[in-house]
Image 1 (cartoon, rainbow, N blue to C red):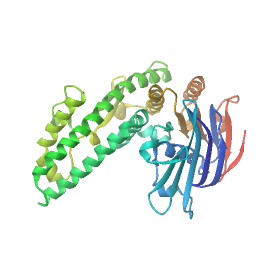
Image 2: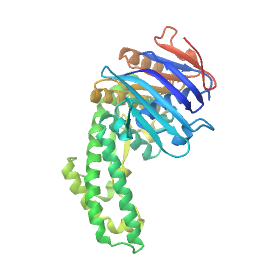
Image 3: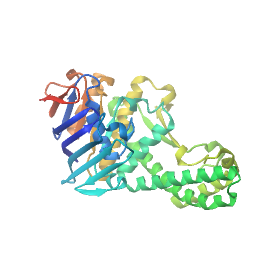
Image 4: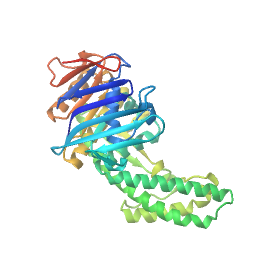
Length: 374
């Protein structure tokens, strides 16, 4: 997968930007708050249809009505054009793929990109939602049907929650819950089964990366943790049919509790990931160096998973992470990217983070504009 050109119009602090990218490494240098991250954010948004750190409307340049992201790229040696128009007046957008209007669900998996930023270094100590989001993004890009299944599950959970509140207020009958329990258990089984398989694959890939980066000193294991297992029997297997029956029994058993709460107290929307280095829980006992190494190993295993599913590497977006890595980790990272010919976009404040003879292009960004390139 390769991006050839990026065009931005009124996106964030860019009035207009037109870039031709190198097939290898693309480095964006400049002081903080000049717009370097916005370039990476535009690709990430076009890939996933969602912004990492803001509302869609905040992506439009101040006082303007709309922003445009247009990316020319190739997938499996076939060229494509992806354009996204974002409007400032409301949360809506227009997406064109090869000139045809499409819905968000239709572009997931078209332009695969993996973004790594300093915020990802805290994923192990953040809320479970951050770790679920990581896993959801991996799965949605690797198998776009997962995005549709997750959307269905979230919609059913919200509808069941609305019904629970009505029952609590004596506006609906508890007997209505069984229909929603049946539908929700089917959706939950699909999500959990796919997540378990993905974590098994991540375990192998991420541990291999962890060992390479740590000079064989650290073993990484990832565990998928089903919420509140202390109060329910663990599933005996993760076959979809078995899980559906398992979830149905639990949802029905929790009807009374959920009515009192007004929300669904069990399901994959509450599950978590846990990480262990040499058998010790990372979030409790990991050093800063181990946290950085594991975050990097996790992202590199993510791009390996996407290569396995799509047949080629995704685009890698590294936002100001070079300053967070020591010289050895920076060197190993760049060696890996160049050896695997992964197209990479990197933002940094200092040219000194990179070898003098690195292949690719260097862009200098200042005040929302391309100042010059090397």
